[in-house]
Structure formats: structure tokens, C-alpha cells
Length: 337
Image (cartoon, rainbow, N blue to C red):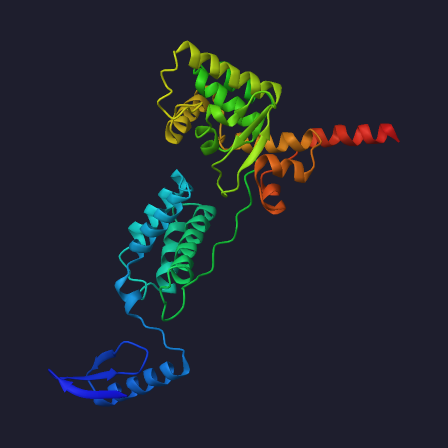
């Protein structure tokens, strides 16, 4: 039943029905109060009513923080996730979940596209969508108007940047930092991500089987990587350095490389500038490594098992087989006929 009464110059409508908490709202006109109460009663009876009060009292920053806590329990919070979360928190955190609209998200998208790439915006908005969906489906927070979603920017064409002839040799010859040098070599031999290399621990290496186990990955799925002779040589060199130092870095949870993500990127940037090489990122070592695996003759399933990609489309974005290699393959094929 609905009760309409005047209080302090306003018409207050209150709906009381079995199974729900009393719902009230004030209006300037009595006719509006009556109309609202009839709509609410109808929705409650049909089972389509969504109580907006929880969404009204919950800020976007609250669900962002809760989502990070959830991911942190599963050891799946890396620097990029924290950075994106902080960006979303600063721009959208003051909105309540009931206030956050498609227009707000569209405005955020368009403003970010003016300063960063489309892929960066896709990552940020995809994270926001995951957070809102988790709030609705797992935490039971009702969205009166549904979870807001918007059109994402078009996925940009993947970077096509492989090491050119002589670039690897130049980088390594000019590198006077043994840790950075081995970091680059291991990235090129294993196709591991920066975060995976940084989190690599000595206990993850099976020297006898020549296998490296990665427990903390971007997609949360552990994987194992076969180690080449060069990869084993690099790891052995780091092990020798550890022995020479008397195991003084063992307090850093037995990590192979005792550097932060930011530190390793800064060192690589300085080395690249020293070598006079343009438009080369540390992550391009992973692109290069994956392309080399295909050039060795491994098939898609074998490469995916090493790289950790879960879809062929994503694997293709990281793969750019050199045209000279294709020419050699064609000549060898024709010669065998």
C-alpha cells in the first residue's frame, strides 16, 4: 500500500509491501507522488523493482578498491592494473554507482583518447566494465538502470617492430649492466613478459629438465617454458653472480632479478638512447621472441604454450615473421620438389 502525506511543504510518498523495505520519495506536486507510488507498486508486484539505495550509497572508488583487494588475494595485481585503477579512481571515483552514466564513461573515453592510444583506453574501459560487472553479479549490488556500457575505441593495429639487423648486437655490446644484459637475453629466449621475468625465482627453475615454471601470469594461468642453451647460460651466469655476492640478495624472496619494473624499463630506455636506436620498447623483445619461435618451425599451439596466449588472434598480433625468412622457406620448398 502507498501512503501520501504532506510534510514541510513537500508531498511524501511511501510504499509499504510485504517482502521489501519501505520505499519513500518526496515531490513538489501530489500528482507526481501518486504517479510514482503507483509505478513502484506495479514494479514490486511484477518482480522488476530494483532498489537504488545500495547503488546510491556506493561510490565507484569503493568498488575499485574492493576489486583490487579481490585480485590481490589471487596474486593477480600488477603495476599496469594498479596504474589503470588509479586513473579510473581519479576520474570516476566520486560518482555513486547510481549516478555513473553512459555519458560519463563516453566523456572519459573521448578525453583519454586525446592524450593516449586507443589500446590504452580499451584496457582502462575494459577494466571498468569488469569491475562494474563484478559488483553486479558477484557482490549483488543492483544497478537501477543496468550496468552502463559504452562503445570501445577500435582496436589499433598491433605494433610491427622487430629487431633490425645488428640492433641486438649493438644493444648488448653497449650494455655495461650485466643484469640488464641478461634480462634482455632471457626475454628474447623465452618470450616472457617483463613482470614474469621480474617475479622469476630460483625455485622456479628445473635445471635437470631444462624447464622454467611461471606461476604468476597476466591471465592467471600458470605455464612452463623450455629453456634453450642460451637461456640456461644466462640463468647460470646470474646464479654465479648470486654466489659471488654471498647470497646477499636472498632476502628479496629468492628472485633472480632484483629490480623493479620501472627500474628495468628506465635502464633499457637509457641503453636504447645510448645505442641510437629509435622506437624500440622493452616489450618488443617479447614480439621478437615469439616471431623467432615461429621461424624455428614451431606451430601455433607450441608457441602459445610458451607465450601463454589463450587465443590465436592475440598470438597473431605478436607475430611478424620476417620476409627474408619466408623467402628462404619458399626456396627450400621449391628446391625439395
